[in-house]
Image (cartoon, rainbow, N blue to C red; front, side, top):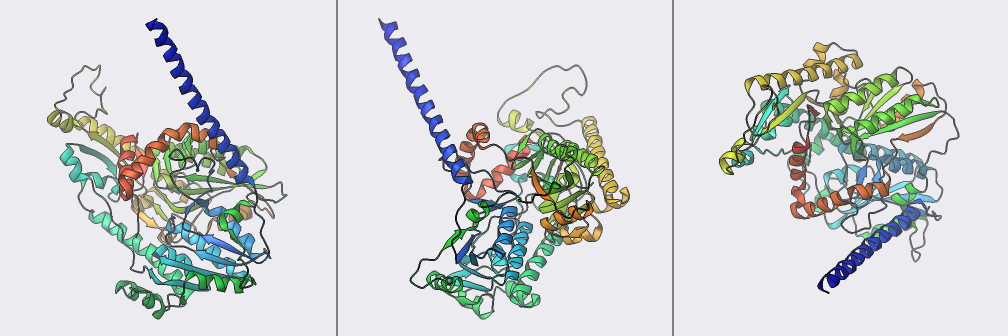
Length: 589
């Protein structure tokens, strides 16, 4: 009888668990279907509407599929987001949309890189040629927020708010002290004095080489920032520099005094002004449409031309395998390039790169597809916030390279890190190792002991070979000598304006400029834009990433603002093979 009840109990528990799992799966499917319907629906634009441009959201390369965002914990790790390409297309369409009377720009702290911000800012400037007004308002403007808001016809700040204007700084994090306390040694093999990706694990401060290049590109980024604001606000650049250097903008009244803004207003006063601009009565409700909904109304290129230009997005760390929408998998991206190359209706390719690099081998796989494509149709590269190291490698063979003045690029160099955990495991934890091997180098990549001189020589030879291949690829693509590329390589990071001067890029230009150039080189009068690779299927992504999303969710809760440090250390652990990667994650404040 006891066995009978035991089996009955087990059966009941199994049924309950199965029912719960089926219920959860059913909820997921319902959310997916509802979200899919919601994402496809269009929003009517009423007459006399205000386009609400909320830029306190993540501005990505492409608008992601957001099907499961409403699921707690398992859903997306971020809030609202929009692809800069969709945002720019929406602003262009709003120029000629009679229902859109003006733009209300609300931004406090945009989540985007410097070059992406310039793309959006230039699109706002272009919108103003329609003679429609842009009104900017915020309670707080960070420097990036003000850079965007400064293009507006009127810039307003809350009377009790704040405007940040202090100049740029860049701080690096070094792990050497922590690793020494843990008893972990980072064994470094690299080429290039400027290839400072390894410095956080070997130094406790910046090397002279690294300080030199950071000073140079930080100055380049700051110059672009000041020039943009100077032109929009009609304030001399030297005056702006002085105001930031002496911290003149401390109170809202200071911002008004120095003509950084046009007025101190509360939101209700701004809304009244928007009613006047849109022809809305004071007692009537303001008709608005968000930039996200407006962009969603028309995602596809409606051109009827049979000619196509393929835009291939290469965004994130470069790895082997499939990758994702947020990483560059060599298989997925090379397959997309190959598909565009073999399609006779596609007359040109634009490779959009936003990557600090990664696996040197994976980069070479993608480079090969660019070489093959270049033989049969034009290939133009457009660089976003960063296209450095492996990110530069995959694009160096393009017919032409477009950068923004504040794009971070170059970093032509390679490195390898082989950790040695012997001190941690043996001296601190009492764990020892012993074994046998069939050859002297059978355990060459062991992490339980230091490298021998012979092993170090072998790995250094491998790194040197990869670097030689790298500068050879660049020299061939840029039509320069290897000696010259070596002289500007060595891991050196350059800002976009300098990259054009030294020949690593061809032109300062936007993403759209690159597309236009591709059409011109292919001798096309009209064309349709198609985008590759296809975005990851939401359900497939959910099923494969749900566990990772849960872990990431709780890690972010635990680490808070220091979550990026955890991410950096995690990257070091999972890196495999020789790396062509940016020296560090750039965080300019």
